[in-house]
Length: 245
Image (cartoon, rainbow, N blue to C red; front, side, top):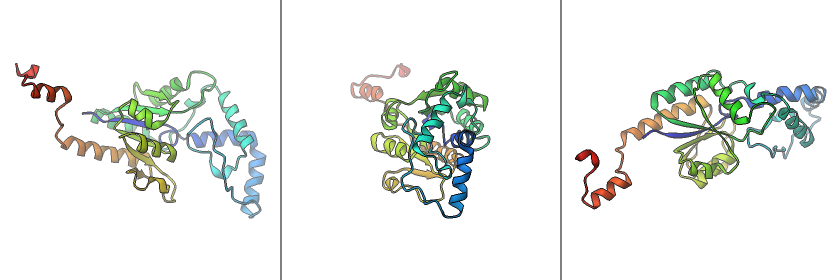
């Protein structure tokens, strides 16, 4: 049976942080430069409680930018007014979408792309995401704009595996569904303590995550598929399958 895999977009395939950083520098360039200089001189204390933007569960802004809560709100408002913003992003790993497309075609996987991207000017976030994926080699992508828990979505879509880079999403999927969770954790620091004992598998790149998916697919294909519910019921009733007649 084909694997059904949910793939997050930002931080896994698309470099949203890079795009946001570019826009932030356009808006707050002089302020950011001043903060960077003060930080390099040790005159700026580390941010103990960085603000996470409530409108999106995508990868957080680059911490070195040290945006205030007000600046982050301003940045997101600015982004929503950019026509086709989600189509302008770079791949986080060059060629990664084409590699995923090639392996998906070879293995016959069913991929559903998950995102909580807010709306911007132009086409909907869903359509922009589909265009972005197609332009990089993934034909006819299925994109689901998330409005609920990733765990509940994994259950509703009967996903076998979810690939994500946000710790909260990974824990949510592992806790609330039977889907396996692959966390793309690019930081050199150890993964969150919450991952321990939850069966969350950590990789350091999306490319490594795809390789892990191939290994999982190979192991699943070697296991004999158990009889389905209808087949078991017919065997219990002593009936023949239609193919037996």
